[in-house]
Length: 137
Image (cartoon, rainbow, N blue to C red; front, side, top):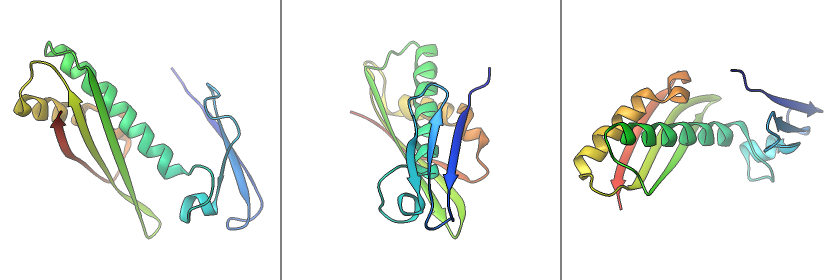
């Protein structure tokens, strides 16, 4: 299986702008620029997309891990914070909350840790990866 996305950039690094399109067209000429990446401009940025990929992959993996342990989550919600420091992505931090009937907080944390270790997107990163919290609601 292969997936793809295309980036188009016009102009200089700081004054130019570009757009991103994914194979599925969920992103379809979605704007990005220096301002959306390093300031507070309109559009997306690579770090935001990396954060969504890590959160999405981890959350799906956790659902599979819970299912293998005979738990069915009602809801899992994961926030991912990507740290960009001096031109390097240095950290990806996950915080997950879950509504999972019949599971103890201790078991949820253990299974979240297992999902964190098995997350395919997380395995791709060459930076600090932390499961900051795993909380039942």
